Length: 160
Image 1 (cartoon, rainbow, N blue to C red):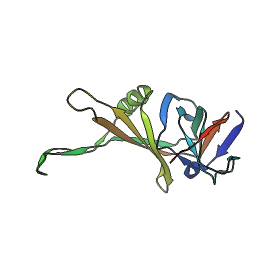
Image 2 (spheres, helix red, strand yellow):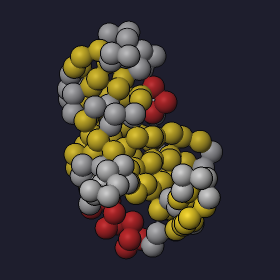
Image 3 (cartoon, helix red, strand yellow):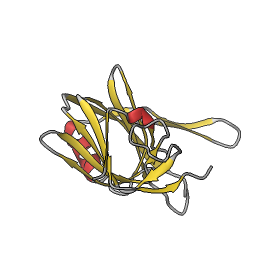
Image 4 (tube, one colour):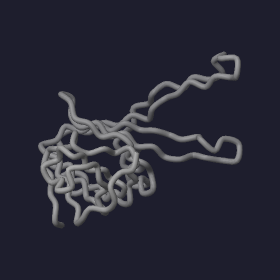
């Protein structure tokens, strides 16, 4: 890979990002993603503009602790009356492992770092004929040592 960014997760935008492949390694977690946007402030951005990276590898290394939550929701009718409420659900390690195994094709729409660790939000499309916008979202929180993102080349600039 030609470009390598270490602990600059805030210098990427994940708004269009899809997971192609995920695997758990002895070092942590590795995600292969497409449509990752490299921001102008990234130390590896030679374009100095928002640009898409080619297929990128996001490695979360030195993972000490992991938790995952299936995000709940509230469903309202057209008159703004609450019809159904589903609370957030903490996943077991087995459920989290299964969710990550099935993550190919899901959207990795947010990755951010704070004092609790690295937060990754993943959306799975549950669309059907009745509800083409239905989806299930998860938030994974990892305490990690570093995050390394590598990619081979830049693609087009982001058009906004």
